[in-house]
Image: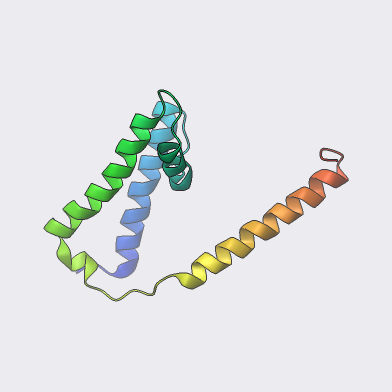
Length: 108
């Protein structure tokens, strides 16, 4: 059995390679919320890859559950704290950016 940190390392490596390939091959940044938004509010010629990307995430999870169900058996925290910290960080960074750009005369 692999230690948790090793599983996290492999997951991070796979995500890093996937995101890098997406940028290299299509020039697009892999942001899940933006991809889903583009699939729900499609522009002509831009929706298909987004829909397939989301379907790949969904069916990838199902395939993993079928072939390696023990991955889903652990009890992990919900991550609610992470969400709150991320939200506060994004709002704070946005506020600092607005103040900085206004002081530089970039924004009115």
